[in-house]
Each structure stands twice: as C-alpha cells, then as structure tokens.
Length: 519
Ligand code: KIV
Ligand code: ZN
Image (cartoon, rainbow, N blue to C red; front, side, top):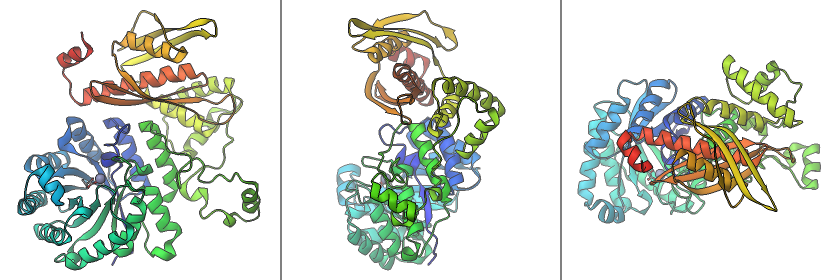
C-alpha cells in the first residue's frame, strides 16, 4: 500500500457551499492558484450543474491549472454528468466525481428510489463519465448511516463500472473514530476488486470528529482524504486540511505516511481564504489560528526561551507563519515594501506596487508601524478594485452625545458620480450604511457585522466584515481603515459589489435586475 496520502481539496465546492463562504469566479481562481502552490493532489472546483457561475468557475480553473487534477462534482444523473464533462473536457488534467446517497433514509425520504435503482444510476453515471476521462470518483453519500452490506455492493458495482476512487463520506458527521476504522477495514475486505481503487474519506465535523475520523481512516488504509482549508464546509464544516496534513507530518513516525503538501504554504492559504470569503477563524484554531503559536503564560514563555520543544510541537515556520510581526514604517521605500509583500506570498505587478505604495504611505502617516496584516489588507484592497460597480468616494459623519448621527456619502456607480446624500441612523455606522443603501437603491438586509482590530494598539486598522442578504442572495464584504466608520462603509460597498457579481454570474437578466431593484 502506498505511503502517500492524496489530498483532495474541496474548499471550492463543499467549502464554498457553506454560509458566508461563497466566492465568485475570480475569487475561486485566486484560491485555486494558491491550492496549486500548496500542492494539493485534487481540486474539486465546483458543481457545474448547479449554476452557470459554477460551470464557468470549474471551466476556468480546469483551463488554467496544470498541477492538480481538477474535478467536477455531479449527481449520478445524465444532466449533471453532461455538465461536468462539458465544463472540463479539453482541459489539462481532469476527472469526474459522481455521487448518490446510499442510506435507506436518503433513498426513501430524499430520492424516493430503491437500492437497485441507486446501483443502476451509479453504474450508468460512472460508465458515461469513464468514456471521457480516466479518472472517476464515486461517493456513497451518507455512507456511515448506510447498511454496510449494501455499501459494499454498490462500491463493488462502482469499481466494475470503472470508478478508480471510492469515497466513503461521513456526510452528517455522525460516526465515531472506532466505528469508522472498522467500517473502512470491512469495506476494503468486502468490496470486490478493492485493490483496483483508492479508498477515500470525506468527513464532516458535526460532532467535532472530522479530523480524528479522517486520520483513523488513514490508519485503516484510506489513501485519499477530502478536506478544506480552515475546515470550512456545510454546517459545522469539513475536515480541516491543515490539521490533517500537520498531524501526518508532525506524527509521521506514528502514521508512517506523508502527503505532497508544501506545508510552508499552509498559513498563506488559510489567510487568503479568510480574506476572500471574509469568514474569520477562531484565534485558538489548531495550526492556523492567531494564537496557535502564541505563548502567553509566563511559565510557558520561559520554557520556550530555554528550549522551544518544551511547549512547541511544530515550528511556526513549518506552516509558513510569519513570526516577524514588526515590519515597515513611513520611512520605508518601495523596494522594502515589495520585499515584504513577496515574503507574505503575494506577487504584485509594478503597477499594483505603485498603487499599493501610495496607500501604504498614507497608512504609514497615520500609524507608526505597518504590520504584515496591514499589508495584506492593502494588497487585497488593491486587487479588489477595478471590477466594481459601486465605488465609495467619501463618507463623513457627525455623531456624539448631543446629536443625531448623520452621514453624508458620495459614491460612483458604473463610473458615474451620484449626487451626495445624507441620512440619519442609530449610530454613525448605521447612518453611513443607510445612506449607501439609499444611493445604490438596494434594500438589502445586514445579516452580520463583525469588527476586529487587524493588529494591536489604538492605531490598529479596524477590519470590518459584513454579510448582506437580498432576495435570497447572500454576499460578504470586508473593509478596513483606522476609522471604523470608513471601514464599515467600505465593507458594505464591498459586499454590494460582490452581490452584483453573484447576480451577474447567475445571469440575471436586465429585466429581472430591474424587477429586483423595484425600478
Ligand atoms: O458530504 C458529502 O457526502 C458530500 C458528497 C457529495 C461527497 O459532500
Ligand atoms: Zn460533504
């Protein structure tokens, strides 16, 4: 059996499906490029039959990436398989991932079909996909709540039809590690010609067991693990890529298997995803949380100074976490800025650097020290401009103990200046957001508002993440500034721009758009 575990990344499919994590095509491409640098073996780029936007993203990722194999998710039916094939046909290195539920609960309540029909559908889908690609993965959805005898039967039929990867998902995060170990061993014994396929697992985290279940499956013989960056995914998420990879790396003597992941790219991948989706991770998150390598207690600090091994089982550098927090100030030049940006893992063009340098100088005038986090914000902000419908030109607020908060906002829409507007609010942020809402004419609801300091100190950049919803469409936006009202206004405008992109990628017609806007 191979001593390499393949990493199947589903950040752009299962991860992207989760609330607040949607990405447009451009954002998915940026993330896919980073996953390629990270060294994942497979990228599940999306679910082409689910929307024209997903189809487009899968196709673009397939066309561009040369390293990892790109997969499209398809239900086991003709239309889905066609969409999957059409999205990737002609690209460099691709495959199809098809699935059908196998638990009686799903078969009866969701699909309304019997076991025999499920096998027929799976076989038909795999056979069709195999005519176009030599890589077909089959997943038995809700495998861990399925009858193991039937599970072995459908997986045997899948191999016979040409599937080369058999995935055993714990779809609802229900199984325990011991049970999962037994199940994988049993399937590897009972499935006919099991040696002709790689066993894969796909664990959800509803009981906080996704990583433990994935690792025990590896011990049982699984050689592919499906996971996501930061563990994003449906409900409580998927198994976290960074935790699995680092467990296999740090405890290599125990597991005796490794991955082809460049662990130094882990931190950057995590940060990039956070920035693209606006979904922050908790500070104590294993491997990539802000506190993952911080030693607060005096006794721990003393120990680490004497010998890092006392309290550190892995070095931050191993996952690419920068420990050099102090970086640049107002006297720093363009070359130093570029050098630091490169160290953080971003390649910027000369033109981008010019613009980022301007923003950097402005920020450095306000702050004594510009930290890595500040720089990342500047890069992301620069990269998010240029494709936007709505542009915030200025925002001014009056507020205080004796006045009703009022905001005056000037914006451009599609490059045209809009007349300045002023509105009241319960506070300065509320007033600013109300005014922006009036100018753009989209009565969206603010469903979440989170404010965080990017770095320590009272001169920190406030980083605001907002989620908005309009006519069932959700979008998240991020903005930053040393003034939190401006940061909030920027985040709100960023979310509106993303909403606009989602509408475009869902091919909403001009008429539908007008109807939605109540014009
Ligand atoms: O959780 C699940 O079962 C899935 C399948 C489509 C693999 O995401
Ligand atoms: Zn899943």
